[in-house]
Image (cartoon, rainbow over all chains, first blue to last red; front, side):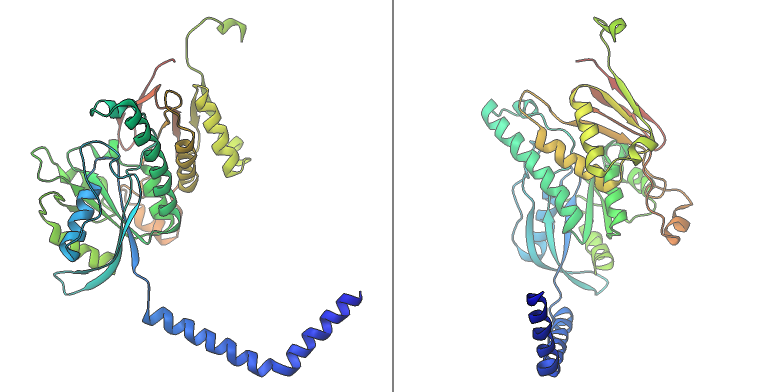
Length: 233
Length: 128
């Protein structure tokens, strides 16, 4: 009771003595936040998602090399080469339409629901290496899920145009992209291969932009940049 | 059940929408994962919300062990809103969320997807 009274007196003092000052401080903070928002807006984080071995890192390297001369990470034939989400900041892309965007590219591990270390033995890894790779891959998938739910502002969904769209698409991924209302571009990758059929992907996703690309050879990548400036700008 | 002793087979649990609706997200995920880790196939009348499915994948990844649990196989039909359909524009207009649909989940080493189309899922199940 006694403490309560003391507390009330203290509050009253603040209101009486410095209400004008605190209003000015609050106003200054608000203006500062307002200016920061407009003058130093953070780059949108664009996540490159897709199943294992769809060519996500090859495409991420292509984008980052084209605009910064750098790379994101190594690629290999062995699934789950990328086992950590890797972010490359402040990549400025100029579209042929004259638009420019500055984004962060986040290359993510392939999303899957199963990982068996024995799969890696077929690629010549010994048992110990395969077990370590599998453990890192499980952590990477969990990490990729977290990024998608919390930290990604737009998605490049990479699918293999030589494979059946329905067999490789992850309905959960599409669900999260739509429930978070994230802008998405679907990349029909690997069009350099003879059995590529990007039209199948286009007919499977009539609601979303589908861009046929070869991340490896850079074929049609200019079209992707133009779409990126349109959708992520 | 006594009559099933010694008979090889796979248990299939068909879980109704009503039963799942009574559970929290974490309870749903735990129920599915525990069931699947016992070697059972789970069929959900109404699938999980995308965020729940994502958390199920996250938890699955944490429970994968060398020479033990290798993960899950999970399939559902693509939503018409995501993958075609003339209703899409109107459903977006009224802000309807993507609906989840009949979903099959099982242990990755026992359940294999043979064929998946926009309106058909063919799966093959083996006993352990």
